[in-house]
Amino acid sequence: MNRTLVVGGVAAVLGAIIAASSLFTVNEAQQALLLQFGEPVRVIQEPGLKAKIPFIQEVRMLDRRVLDLDPPVEQVILADQKRLDVDAFARYRITDPLRFYQTVGTEAIAETRMNATVNSALRRVLGSVTLLAVLSDERTRVMNEIRTQVNNDAQRLGVEIVDVRIRRADLPEETSQAIFARMRSEREREASEARAQGQEQAQQIRSRAERERTVILAEAQRDSQILRGEGDNQALKLIGSATSADPQFYSFYRTLEAYRNSLNQDDTTLVLSPTGEFFRYFGDITGGGTGGAASGPAAGPGTAAAPAAAPAMAPPSTP
Image 1 (cartoon, one colour):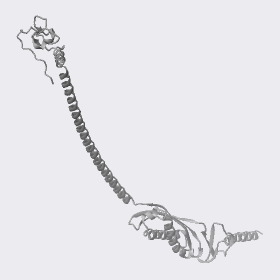
Image 2: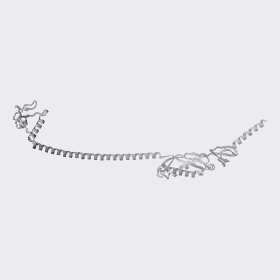
Image 3: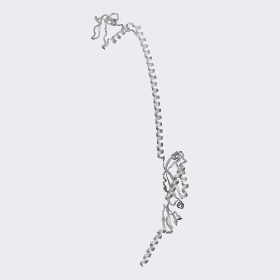
Image 4: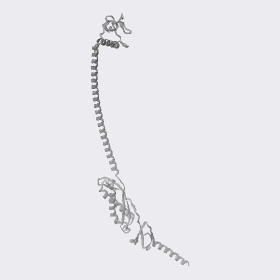
């Protein structure tokens, strides 16, 4: 009885092991390659529960989704001899599991080979275009050409390249520093030229303003001399006409002007004879007298009288 139970249990365990080794599941995101003694015998792409010969056949699962490929940064030389550090990425799908297994075996080996393929295509295509094409709308055409070339090589691996894109395209650090230095020197040169042009224009403006100032002052002085001469001429004409019209009144007026200019309130002292010619209008309004009514000489404040024989001052001459 006990022996029967033991045999039955062992048989059940063996049956379970054999059943587990005979059955496997393929989900929607996978595709399977059935191998017998290491040789592929069948490709399974439909999801579900599948069977195989236990201990003789094995299953190699491959992803059927779109996978990412991130090759290392590659430095390329463009057609205009500019260097770029290109960081690209790609997306691929395993379309032929049998060829994929026969050529590369695993996804890790496939990614290594496709990284080299992508970088080679980048060097070939970017080596025939300029930096302007990479940075302009022509970049889409360049990416499509890179994808086409990568696909031509990837199809031999049973892989389809879905997309290839450039994540970043930067100048190398030493090239960037050289470009920045050249840009700085160029801007400094332009600034120096602008300053020199500004100084030249400022000097021209100052010279032109100084010349105009000199011309204006000269013209103003000329006009003022002309006006002054005309005024003096008119004044002389008026004085001449006034003198010829009434010489006695003009002599009286000039004598009064001499009194006002001489007998002011400053500290100047005059010592004159009251009977002299200068005071002829003091005694006679017509100027016919020989002096004023005063008996002694006239003197300024705080001064001694002059002797009677002091010379007389003649009236100012007619201008």
